[in-house]
Image (cartoon, rainbow, N blue to C red; front, side):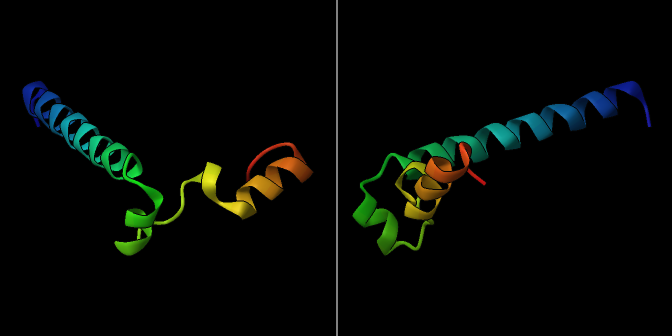
Length: 61
């Protein structure tokens, strides 16, 4: 495998990661009711279990 093939694969991986994170941010910006309707898991700040863990243990699990 040449150096340029490796760089190309690395670039594609970065592009996919950016697209995935952009999609996650878009869904997380939706109102909570819509997130629940589409089956999106609760964000850590909105998750009561995560809030309780943070209060009791000092950090989210």
